[in-house]
Length: 79
Image (cartoon, rainbow, N blue to C red; front, side, top):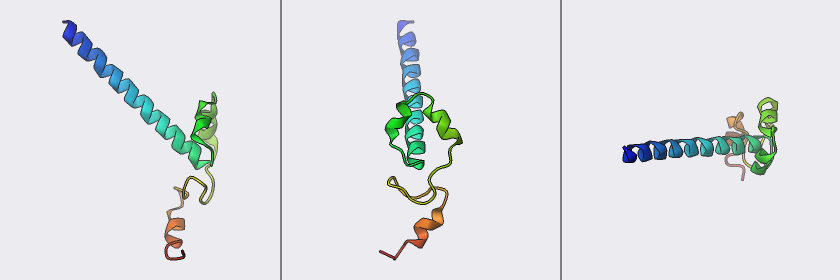
């Protein structure tokens, strides 16, 4: 019975940590969409602000605009 209990606890521990890591990664990507550092997600309620804020139009220091894939295509061959 003890081995079963330990295995169930281990399963839920891994699952919880995996979910937390996925959440943090999504929060950092969203902060980058608005041109902010990923460290901003440590500010309480900042993620709620990101829910209603539109991302930067065009490229920013974190990469191209994910909503405008033609921007990346139109820049090919110009460098």
